[in-house]
Length: 489
Image 1: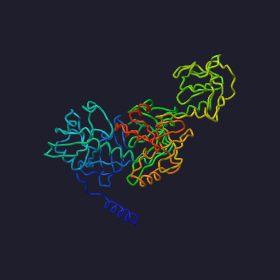
Image 2 (image 1 turned 135 degrees about the horizontal axis):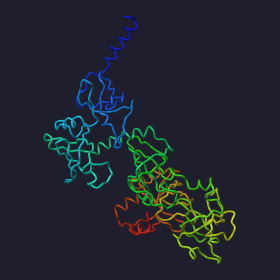
Image 3 (image 1 turned 45 degrees about the vertical axis):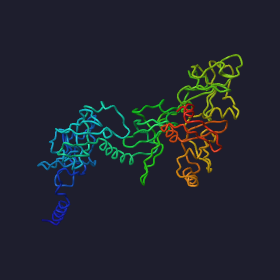
Image 4 (image 1 turned 90 degrees about the vertical axis):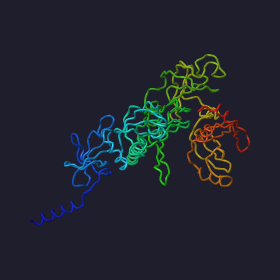
């Protein structure tokens, strides 16, 4: 043999020595997809023979293959054959009863059919055995469906208990879903970037926003990011189970046991309605539109032309000849009106409108007094906003609101723990200067704005107590029942 042949032989023998020679039946193995055949997926396991998986076992609900060549895959060893190592990602429902114990010992998923409802859960047919799946283990945490939605369906389960020679079998589908979610989360962590627009499903609606599942991880859409309109209620925009597109605003994958946090936006995944004003002729001066009266003020009427786009018809432009002291003399909130665009203030993003045909020529929106400017951007009780920490005092935190006003988040309305000095110390630590904070407008008394946190309000609602809430000056806000009757979430 030549020297080259001798070197190749040594390398070949060394390679064989590194190959695994034994894989036990039921053992969980990992390998790379080497080739995809017509009916079989071949997996390189680092053994003398390839692993073989039926292609149909790797199809999703739409019949699409879930792997490609080069992907890493985990499966269970079923048997050694002359063709290779028979693998399976789960045990099918037509297996032998004796294999159920093997699946339990190996921690291998098992296929079962939900045949009926029983006390505390469901009856599931696995091979020729009947198993039990508790209600709490049939779906992912927080998912609520009627029991009838599961009956007659086939799912993959994890066997959590196996006893009495197969007469006592307890299953969990939730564990399978959590494992799949963990894999999807790992993929998301590698691929997600701030600014990405991705698809998700609304899983839960709260007064302060909506939670959206991105396929393995949930993110939160703050109510201010659900749409371009102000004062939105989450339930008016989305429903549980609804598919939505969201923009990734920010994320923190946690660490040291902390929860993963994703901040999402529905409105920023859509087009800002003001882009049409600024870049096109849709709202050019002189154009006619149909709108709805959203709000009346002493100096005019705010009219919604489309979601997120309002204009102001000054009191002098209400379409009547006679002088009116207040717009309510000729208009009502909710009324539909035809308007003409008089002027566009691009810098401040404002439209000047008139009802019907122009009575007075306007080259720019009417000038407003400082008090009227504040009225344009005023906040209202029950509104949920994102503010910025302005200063911290021993009795609470002053928060700058988006319209420039300042509200007080009293120490009693925070989540800081401890009592006395310990609570004050925790307050300073929890609310550093310029930190962004989601707050609810609890009460407005003149220029004084009292705030609370969305989670505090939700806790109080759940407790349904009638305790009185007072500020640092001892002023009584009334019972929570009174408060909730005024705050519309």
